[in-house]
Structures are given as structure tokens and as C-alpha cells.
Amino acid sequence: MKSENDMNIILVGRHHGQSRVVALNAPVAVGLLCLLLAVLGMAGWAGFQVAVSKAEAAKPTPSALVAHWQARLDEQKSELSVVQQEVQQQIDALTLRLGQIQGRLLRLDALGQRFVESGLVASEEFNFDEPAAVGGPEDIGERESFSAPALTRMIERLEEQLDDREQQLRLLDKLASRQKLEDEMFVEGRPITWGWLSSKYGYRSDPFNGKRTWHDGVDLAGKEGSDIISVAGGVVTWAGERYGYGNLVEIDHGDGLVTRYGHCKTIEVNVGDVVQKGQVVA
Image (cartoon, rainbow, N blue to C red; front, side):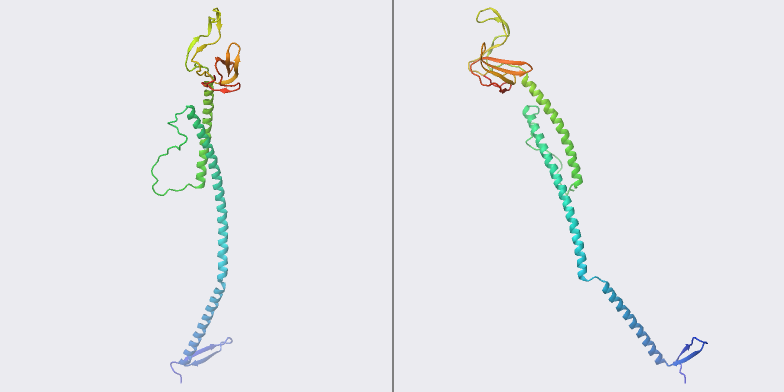
């Protein structure tokens, strides 16, 4: 007798459309279904485990991972070393240029000091032994540092300014030296620090015979033992006794100009000495 819970399975053949009916009761059908699901589940679990195994096998081992990052670290260290060398080379180059600038500034200071000593500039206004005063607001908060290219450009501009100042100061130095030389060579003043004019240049009555004679010099009467000074800078060409002059000092001032200081009690210079204006010669 066929129950309502029975299940019929119809099997159809490939040829001639023949079919066969297999009748299964409900408990057997449920059991087969559960078995089928279990087989599918086991197959899925097995596939999942296979996939997990393959993924684990594809993952790098800890030693390989460490080796990879160690290689990257070594590469970065090498790049950092190259950068440090380049930075050090830039620093060395900038240091060398700064040293050269300092040397040039020292020369400019020395030249400026010469101007002060020569009286061309006032020593109260310019003191080359002290740094120049620089004003400005107080440093509040953080300030950005200069980059290497910006610092290089600043040094280049400073070098250009130094070149310009050096040219100007050299020209001033030449003009000052020429002016000083002209002042030294210019004959002026009296060869004594104290005394009076006792005989003028030109015709006079000869003190020995009373006749009118030409006097090609100037006589200055001074206190015995007082200084006789040069009226201009020059080179001593005679220092000793000479006929008609007694003890004589002769100084050549260039351009054919010569001064003679005769009738000296003592002589304080020698032939070949370079004397300055106002220097004691006898």
C-alpha cells in the first residue's frame, strides 16, 4: 500500500525515452538528503582548508620578511650617507668662501684704519676696531633658518658688494697717498722752531766786505742748540762739512728741488736717509 509521505524518484534513460520509477518512503529520503548535504559540506570544508594552506604557503616567512626590510634599511642608509657627504661638501665650500670674505674684511678694516690715521675720516665717527652697530626688533618667536641655496645667494651678493667697496677704497687710497705725497713734497714753513729772519733772499750788503752782493739763501737766527727741521720730505744727499756752508744738510725733494741747511752745529741725519716734513735733521 502506498503512503502519502512516500517519495517517487523517476529515472529517465537516454535512449527511447524509457523511464523507471523508484519509490522511497519519507525517512529514507530525508536520510539521503542529509547524507548529500554532509558530503557537500565536507567537500566545501576541504576546499577551504586547501585554499588556506595555499595562502599560508604564499606568505613570506619571518626570516624572508626581515631580510627584505633589512635590505631596504641598508639602501636608505646608503642614500643618507650620500646626502650627508653632499651637505658636508657644501658646508666646506661655504666655510672656505666665508674665510675668504673675512680676510677681505680684515684688509678693508686695515685700509679704513689708515684713513683714520691720515685724518681723512674722523676717528670719533669711524672706529674700525669695533663692529658696526646693527639695530632691529627683538627676536620674538621662532624664525626660519636659511636654506643652503639662499645662503649661497646671500654670500654671492656680499662678495659683489665687497668687490665694489674694495675698488672704491683702493681709489681713495691712491688719491689719499698722492695727496699725502704732494703735501710732503710741498716746501713750506721755516726750518727752525724758534728764531727770526736775519737776512733775506736777494741782494744785500755783504757782512764781510760791505759790498752789494747777491744772497741766494735765507738766514734765520735761532737759539744755539735749537732744532733745525726739514721743510719738506725727501732724501738726504749731503750730510757734512762743505765750503761756504759749514756743517751742511742737503735734501733732494724731487723734480729738481733741493733745500740746504747750513751752518749747523751738529747733524742728525746721514746721506741716503729718507726724511719727512718737520723731521729734525740738525
